[in-house]
Length: 129
View 1: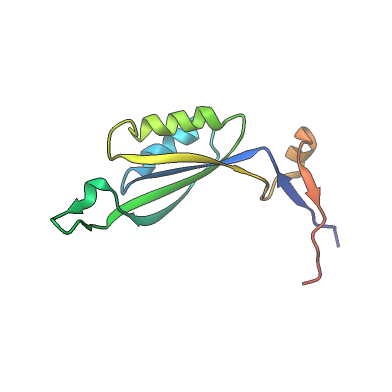
View 2: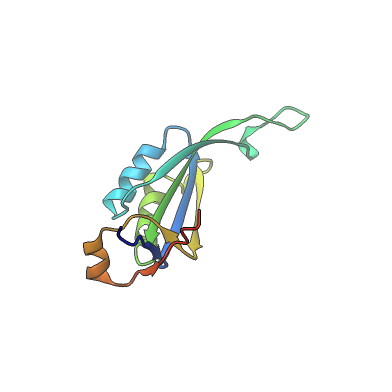
């Protein structure tokens, strides 16, 4: 049986973009055109100043899409900018985005890529389970 290894990515960041429901597709397309490999979307409910109604200040739930994109640190600024512009986040009420540095991330990386770039860490998994 071959030994399994976990390839650890260390030079990556998470871009998170929270937008109005229905806006994610355009933003993801812009991210992919800028070099992102993919994205994850999930749905959320949020509140903000624009959703407050009445004298009681009751907040109305607003449907949101949360887009997560993991990118290499050298791509972060370019992809962040393209997503921001595609989502029209310079318009009030359109959304919010931020980046988070990731200490480490793991996924399948083809052997050829690991050998070509060689900048990935590899861990032997603990197979006690």
